[in-house]
Amino acid sequence: MSIHANRVGGHDRGTAAAGRDTRVATVSSIDAAGSNGQESPPAVLRSALEQLRVEGAIFLRSEFTESWAYESPPVAMAGMLHPGAERLIFFHIVARGSCWISVADGERHWAGHGDVIVLPYGDQHTVGGEAPAECVSILTLLDPPPWEVMPVIRHGGGGARTDIVCGYLHSEDPSIAYSLEETAPSNASPSLISTRLPELVLIEVLRLHLATAPATDRGWIAALRDPVLAPALSLLHSSPELRWTVADLASGAAVSRSLLDERFRQVLGRSPIRYLTEWRMHLAEELLATTDMGVVMVARRVGYDSEEAFSRAFKRARGLSPSHWRAARSAPSAATVRQAATPHA
Image (tube, rainbow, N blue to C red):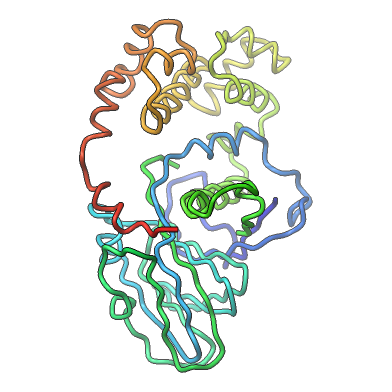
């Protein structure tokens, strides 16, 4: 599946320097080759994005009829949906009809059936239909959580109908067209689909962003397009548990060891082995946070023969031993509170 964004004024964020663009992106489907005829991004891109640890939920279904408009205050919504979070990523799936959305600049961006509206910084926004209408706060239309069932808002003047499914995402990791047939197996239960959909939306949006980012000489995007680094990264991401050496990677990429090391340092700012270690630590965090796998097994899964060597590397990278890090992540927290706001299937 290829996707593209109908952005205003070009790409949403540059990659050469830090920036913050709050403009709205709507994502919709295109042919498999993409809008510019380029091939799909390499598999390493998807494999990396699929390691993101994401919290979120589809939390609201709404049925609006003309005329209608509402405003969403992000800070209040963030505190209500994910206690302790100052900002969330919000997304709105237009399941029927059409609507517009505007952020701080007041410009209206239109979306129709099948589009996904993504607000990556959770900015305050206003959504409405075709006809002029009094704008109300979304908080006046919602009962406060916890919700035993997913809230359904019905609001408007009784005219043409627009259905919107709303969700939020929260992730501590740095950094649509969608179809349930593709993003979930045919035998998946409704609860599995509702749990995975927010994560899948984020993966697809980030894949789009990275795949269409402007050319740059440094950073991960440049590495994925580099004829020397791309095959080496593919090897590391597909089999991080192997005993990789610079010589092995150079052989797999069909280049010299000196050239491979030089390109890693120039483009990614680190040696090949340091990159591998950082990727292994990221994978280890994922296994520790999402499974009950023992530390010894986690160590083997990410390429360490002994628990001691893995524990030393993990503590050096994260400041805690694997067992203490897992215990800290599992301690009672706001996650228990958030569970009450997650809709039941």
